[in-house]
Length: 94
Length: 205
Image (tube, rainbow over all chains, first blue to last red; front, top):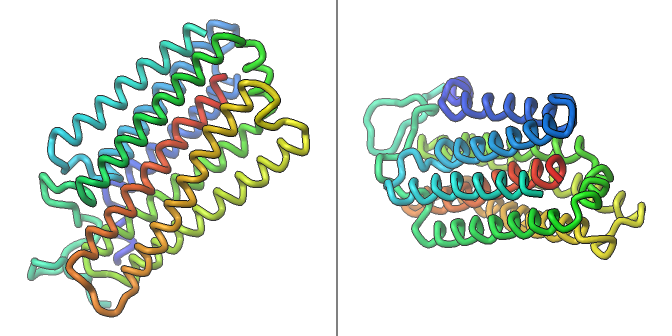
């Protein structure tokens, strides 16, 4: 009963999405997704962007920031957005 | 089997729906200073790593190919499973299902230990192949980033062992939920840092 309730909960659904996103990222990131130099750079940029989206989900649904005071949630989300932009820009510049 | 009850409510509740009240700070404010500080530090480390890559992209690409991406991906899934177990443990604690919570936290500890075992095997493989922190900039950053993260994993495991002991103690105390949330929040940070380190170091270099 307890386990069934937990498996139906929102974090379990989010976990399944994170799992699928991880598989997709691994496939894209190991040179299966796109061909050519530009394709690989696009694929890796997508993988990095998805990683930061996964972090946001972990923050909101596992760390329970969805229910937290707005300043705390916003700080976390701004870090995700800011570091994601910086990392992808630095990757593409390399 | 008796349904677990949620403290403060008269009717039994679904343990999957034991969410915190709106405006609740997970754990406590001091913990978040530590978590946000760590996030800034790792963010800076990611930036420095990518700047170093700009100086020698060919060496970084060749070095990346020396890493075992499957090992990194398996560790990603190990931490992801552990995070879900911790979420379940926190919700069970809220529903006063403390024995179930202790089991979930125990499972998360086992997953954390598995992560470190896999990481140790990976380090041993690299060092046997002559790839150490002095090999080049890539491997210096590889060991620094993953080593710093592994230290966080070890600290997180210690925190989860405390959380498990809190869940198992026969006489509940008022601050138990706060302690559990502190350990859980730190562990989720450990998880999401690997979610970023894996693509950055193993896939993007």
